[in-house]
Length: 74
Image (cartoon, rainbow, N blue to C red):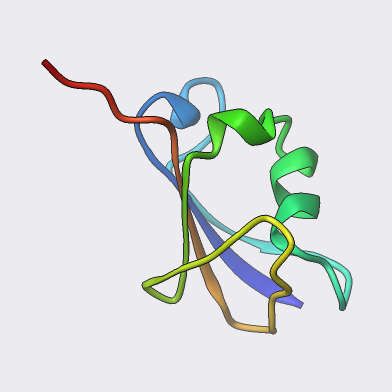
């Protein structure tokens, strides 16, 4: 299935900003995060098609996955 993956802030370092990638049917968000070499603790905010999601959630062909690191401020 084709998934558009968007990475933000520090997760882009050494990776990419946005790419369409092919994953096997039944892959969940956690599978994609691990395949990208991202520690699940680094994936603090996750959205699928603009809606909040969790690492165990499944994906469908054509979904857009956005992953954000923890955000700090002061």
